[in-house]
Image (cartoon, rainbow, N blue to C red; front, side, top):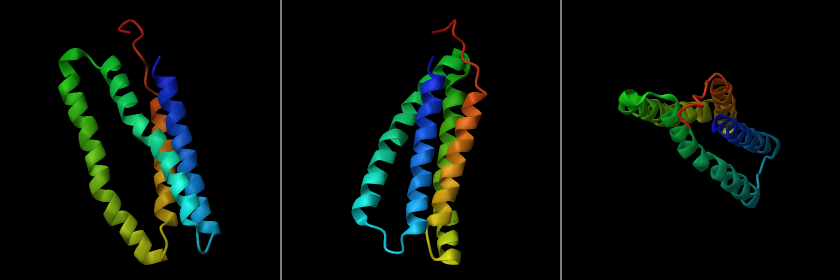
Length: 126
């Protein structure tokens, strides 16, 4: 059962991102040490998510469709990688802070966790 662990890690990563955003919002001159520790711990969970998601994708998709499924998974991730800098930069230019962009990131991660809840695992393939 990979889905519960994936959901848990996604929620933890989302909460850490939201904590980072709250820290940025409440501190006029944030500490480099605090930001570094928050980013490091957040990245541990984030870096664990992709192999977990790939493993779950492998479990729930029919073998004949795996190439298309992994290609689509990568496409969505790359679209996010292209849109994110432009959106974040626009928000920074408008508000003078990264806080709004970081809040959006945390909200998107929580939405992703919600979508993971909707996945039905095929336990017969495990």
